[in-house]
Amino acid sequence: MSRKTILIVEDNYDNRAIYAAILGRAGYHVVEGRNGVEGVGLAIEHRPDLIIMDLSMPLLDGWGAIAALRDDARTASIPVLALSAHVVLDGDYRRSQEAGFAAYLTKPIEPKDVLHEIVSRIGPARPEPMVEQEG
Image (cartoon, rainbow, N blue to C red; front, side, top):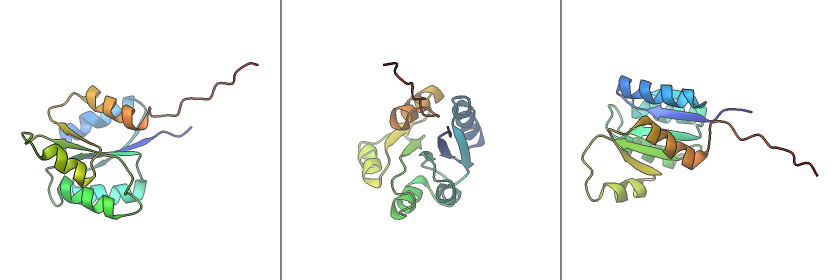
């Protein structure tokens, strides 16, 4: 059984390392990108099951990256969780939904809460084995 892949696109090394460690321990295959340009390229290359995307990054921010992902048929349907350290304004949630994000999460957020969001959207890292019923 193959593991599900999560792409983490985050310019802060410490944040990326924490999420990667938690998700790796949960059994997911983790791919890491440092900015939006890298993230879009990695999404096309790896076709992850889900993407965690910081909104404030160099070269291409999360808003630009989600637009590029949604415009490409190869990545258009991948769920993307937005991560933001900015104060949440009234229109942020609506704007994130309109942009195509599956969820808008604010930092600081406990890694276990990020894991819960992932599992609730794509399930555990590996499919549950089929158990044959005796009959």
